[in-house]
Amino acid sequence: MSEPGPLDEDARARGREQALIARRARAAIKADLAQGRRKPGDVIAARLDDPVIGRMRVRDFLHALPGIGDARTDQIMADCQIADSRRMRGLGEHQERCLMSWVAEAVRPRGRLLVLSGPSGAGKSSVVTILRERHPEIAFSVSVTTRRPRPGEIDGVHYHFIDERTFDRMIDEGQLLEWAEFAGNRYGTPAAPVDDLLDAGRPVLLEIELQGARQVRQSAPEAVFVFLAPPSWETLVARLEGRRTEAPEVIAERLATAQVELAAETEFDLTVVNDVVARAADEIAGLLGVGTSAGPGA
Ligand code: 5GP
Image (cartoon, rainbow, N blue to C red; front, side, top):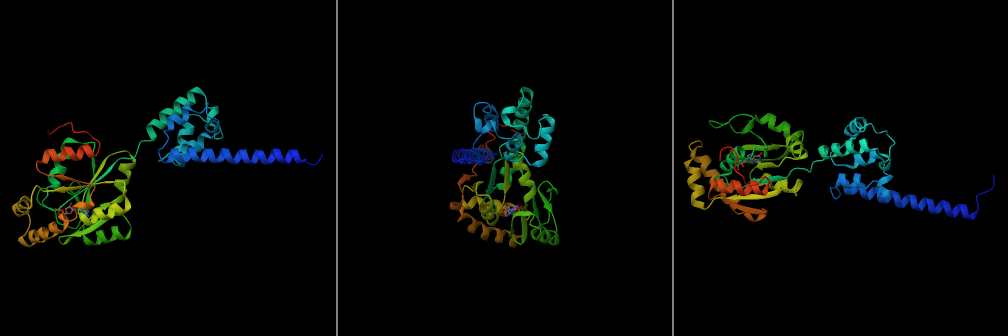
């Protein structure tokens, strides 16, 4: 065998360079898929026209999609009867259709997270009650709290009522997206259910106080932060004092906290004034992208 001449060496160098360019181009497509800049269906559709996509392995394409890990990739490849080494350009008609339908089903855009905050007495829970009735498509995070249930509150629906030790354990184990102490009790948002709901494409609403909203701002800055304001200070006082469920010292503490919370309004993306509860609820539903059509309970 003869020694490789300078021409062969050149050809090899060019080959290496081309391979590098192709790898970079594939990496760019995968990054676009991962970050939602390109739709998976469009990439599949371009597989015969775009040589970079054509040479991409089907397995690598699937793996690049958000929310599709190893197990899901294996499942899709098996269901569509696609060989492990198959490249996009080599897909048969049936395989392409099968892949398209999986991708449409599996890759849902992540749901929108809305943080509803505002002073105690602004009417957050009334707004949430209406939203629950009218918009079953919205998921409401159920917080944990060390507060005792008020009459009519249901464990697992309004809150998970837990003891101090369980709350401590949840903090230690990093189970809470945020937590805060408020008027002598602790409240927190369990992280995993919120994450699962968002992954499933559901709009999620957190109804939390100011310190918690600030923590979520740090960990999920993409969320929409809404400040629910009472129409006036007098309305807030009347609402808090009208509650027969709290002792006078608790009401006084909540009023003091309300003043601090009112001052934080400018930290939020927008303010919704709770003049009429149903109207405020509609405005918030609109922000979650679920429309304002009245459903049951309207
Ligand atoms: P309440 O005792 O009136 O149900 O709630 C007191 C305050 O705690 C309200 O401002 C409510 O929005 C807030 N809150 C409820 N759940 C959570 C939570 O999980 N985290 C935080 N930070 N605040 C919460």
